[in-house]
Length: 339
Image (cartoon, rainbow, N blue to C red; front, top):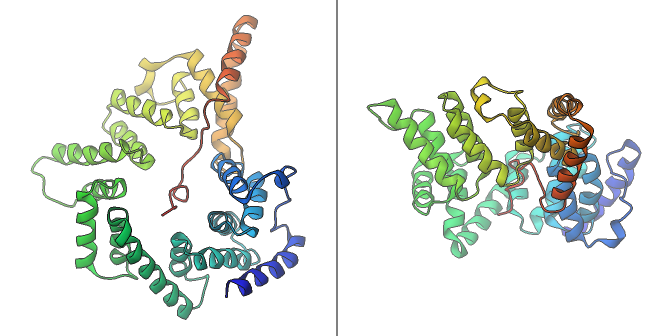
């Protein structure tokens, strides 16, 4: 079946080239292994350079790298939701799923427009079987995904879902701790004082963040800002930046330059803010989050114009010294799907 899938994909590629669905091959592609091409494509995509990333992901996908097959398919389905791109995306998802890649299986059965109902049911069953096998090896890792499976409408077993969730929470899996915080936010559980609910919710988020789960950082920042606690929110912003979060460069730069909420006025630092925006403009593309890039560019230009010639030279030296040591990326939900 895998051979037929690959044959079908090659035919579709030849048909769709004329429509621009297939990216141009990067000049350095012959020097890269499929794994290296995937990693480069993944990095570029995580820096909003989707058009450039697609060539690397396509090459790695054609060479059988299942991570690339999945991410390239997602790129086509998410950012080019046209019917002419869908067949290529589905073929890559099928290849990845046949290789045992669970995120691809999940995508195939949970998106009703991709396959027939019969095929969806088949991949749903294969996904569950694969997950149960994974649970024998890494039960703590698998429990949360089993909770998700049984908790969804297409899973439908509340008792099993709750059991797997409790196991995942007891094992302090970041996804489970984050989910617990969201449950509290939605009003689950009884608290005599709502301040206690807020405290408990943020405690779970902090635990998840301390295990490097990026969405927990973002939710903590939002929560503390809503409460007017900008000092604590700023502390979490700093920690998120230290995780290499790309958007934090823009948000911190704007905050430090005074182009943000008034609650952050005590943290103004024009030189540091200029450095952060400079790094954001260096690392980030504009294929996504274009408004963020444009805002950062406007604020950067305003601040840069105020510098003396000496200050401008110092600024450029500081920025260049940081470019080789850190890779800033935006970690969306697809960045985490590697189980």
